Image 1 (cartoon, rainbow, N blue to C red):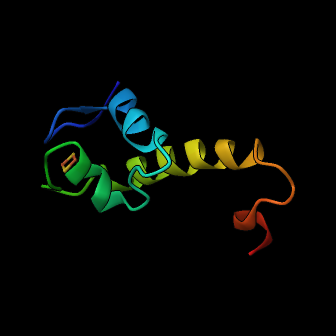
Image 2: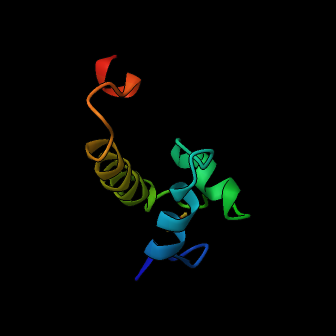
Length: 71
Ligand code: FES
C-alpha cells in the first residue's frame, strides 16, 4: 500500500527501512533513508504510526532486561 503519494513510498518500504538496528528512528530519517524528503507532509502521521507499530512489536520481543524498557 502506498503511504506517501508524493514520494510513492509503500508501507513495506517504510517497514524495511526501520527493520535494521541502525535504521531510522525519526520520521524525517525514514524519508532520507529512502532517498527522498517530505513534500506535503500528509503522510508523516501514517509513517510515524507504522514506525510505532513496528518498533513496539520489536520491543515486545526484547528480554525483560532490555534497557529501552527500563528507561
Ligand atoms: S504524501 Fe508524503 S510528503 Fe506528501
